[in-house]
Image 1 (cartoon, rainbow, N blue to C red):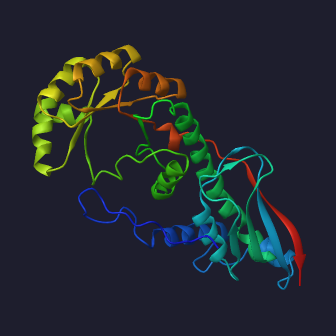
Image 2: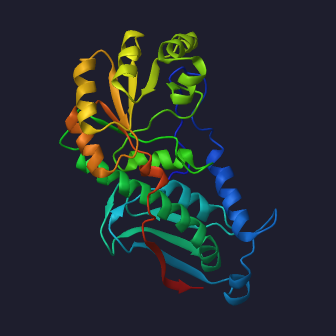
Image 3: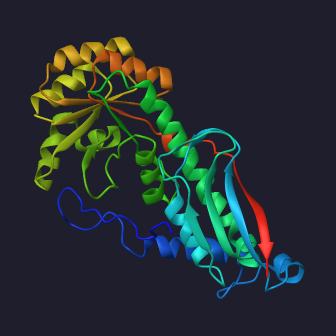
Length: 300
């Protein structure tokens, strides 16, 4: 059975875990309540009236299209939390590449429970596998640039960030900051509120954390370098401007390219010589991977 315990991680400052152990169970409970209704919500009315309660079954999760699998832990918890519970058996691990027709997992238990949990489990699997699949496309495109780190962003589905970040890792990407609380990233509105790049950086130093600042011109880049920013985000710069920024920086700070990063744009940024590329599309625009659940046998 797939482990259902979420990964524990500490922040850069050791303040608190990025994910509490009960996050996954709370999310699954809410998702099942949404589909089944009510506080106790344990009835799929169609299955209740159509499927015999004593009928057992086995089902397979099948890939209809090629992609990368993610979401096994949360799918397992969905099947474990219906009544009576089912057993989710991973055939492929998260991060595995799937071809059309590949079997990703099997589910064994009460057929009524399998059918009750089916859509909720597939919703998680399809969305998270879609993110892993898009991420793998970017990671493969950047494979020729081993010095470049592919990152996600905070553009995630509310409440699902910890799962979507795991899906990015399954696809070969890396995670940016967990949220607003564990890293300094000075954006354009912060700069405007502080009165300039230098003043914003100086104020952020009070947090005793590495400072990253967003710039969109070479003039702002010069300010950030003079103020000693450890990381500088090049926002929506052209490949030519990024190349000039890399030359100007000369290794004094790590450079991150961001803003509308298509696959071709990410490769162009890597060629320009940046250190990091952050791509919001990994999470906010990934199409769901087509997976289906097929009942293969039943018995009493």
